[in-house]
Length: 433
Ligand SMILES: Cc1cc2nc3c(=O)[nH]c(=O)nc-3n(C[C@H](O)[C@H](O)[C@H](O)COP(=O)(O)OP(=O)(O)OC[C@H]3O[C@@H](n4cnc5c(N)ncnc54)[C@H](O)[C@@H]3O)c2cc1C
Image (cartoon, rainbow, N blue to C red; front, side, top):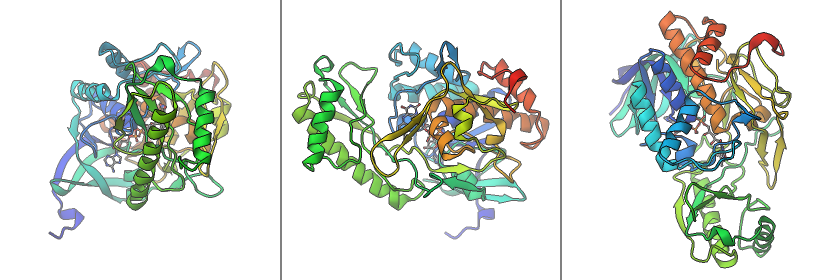
C-alpha cells in the first residue's frame, strides 16, 4: 500500500516521546514520567536494556570516584533492584557485574512503576521535522508503517537515528579518517572450572600461538580478560573485534555479525582445546547482536572534548557526570588508547551536549550526545548514559509542563530538580567556565 507520511495513522503519542530503551532511554522515560509528563517509550526489540541485554555487555563500568557515587538517580535504583533479586555481582565499587536476563525484568518493573507507556517491537525509521521541531517519528513494526507523535522527543537510540532522520548535524568516528571504534560480539561459556584457570599471561601466550597459526582471525593481540559473571562457572568475553564497519548500515552490520560469529567459534574451540578449566565448558549464549561502541555523535550547542574529560572540567550547566577513563579500542587493529580522569575527581556533562543544534523540541541522550571522539570514549559507558538519560527526561518534562522549548527552560532549576531526585550533580560554585 502507498502512503505519504502525513496519511500514516498515529499509533501512539506522548507529551514526551523517548526512542530507544537502553540505559539512557530507560532512565529518560522513567524520569519524564515521574516528573509528570505523559511518556511514550519506543524500542525496536521485545525487551529493554540496550547493549546490556541485546549485546550482553557486562559489567557496569566505573561509576564511583573514590567514595563518591558519580552516577546515581535512576541508575542507583536499577542497581538496587538487581541486588534485591540477587542479580548483581561482586563488591568492586568500580565495576558491577549483573545478570542481563534479570535486568530485562528490572526494566519492565521500572517503566511500569513510573507509568511509562511502552511500545516494543517498534523501529523508528524516519522523522518528519520542520522549523526546528520534530513533528512525528515514523515507525515500522508488524503493524506496518505508522507514526508516533509528541511535544518533546528524546533520542536515546544509541545511533542518533531520530536526530539524523530529522536532519540534525552529526559526526562519526575519529577526526583523521572518520573510523569508529571496532565492534565486539559478546559470548558466554558455562561449565567453566574457574579455580583451574591459568594466569592471564599464559592464556594470552597460547592465544598468540593460535593467531600465528591462522586458527584465530581476530585483530586483537590479546584475549582481553575473562570476565566473571554473577553465575559460578559462567564467564563472558569482550574479545571479538570487527574493524571498519558502519553501525548505521544494515548491509555492513550483516557482515559484522557473520565475521564476529566466526571469531566466536574459533575462540570457543581454542578455549576448550587449550585452556585448563574449559574442557567441559560449552557455549551457552552469543549476544543477539554485535555490540556497537561508536556511531553517530550529534552536534549540540557544546561539544564535550577529551580535554574536558581528562581535566575533569566542571560546567555551570552540568546535568550529569562521569569518572570513567577515555577508553578507545583501536579502529584499525590491536590495542586500546586509554587516558584517565584524575583520581578522586569527575567531569561534568553540560546540558548543551544534549541539545542538538537547530532543534527546539529534541534532546539527545546516552552514547550519541554532543562530544568529540575522545570524550565519547569515556561517556559511552552505561552508568554515564543512564545519567544523561535521566537529565534529558527531566528536562523534557520541564519543557512540557512549562510550555517551553529545550533552550528556554531554566537549567539551574533542572540541576536542582536532578539533585532532589538523587542524581549526582556538581555544585556550581567552583565551575571551570
Ligand atoms: C563491546 C562493548 C563493550 C562495552 N563495555 C562496556 C562495559 O564493560 N561497561 C559499560 O558500562 N559500558 C560498556 N559499553 C558501552 C555501553 O554498553 C553503551 O555505550 C551503552 O549501552 C549506551 O547506552 P545507550 O542507552 O546510549 O544506548 P544503547 O545501550 O545502545 O541502547 C539503545 C536502545 O535503542 C534501541 N534502538 C536503537 N535504534 C532504534 C530505533 N531506530 N528505533 C527504536 N529503538 C531503537 C536499541 O535496541 C537499544 O535498546 C560497551 C559497549 C560495547 C559495544
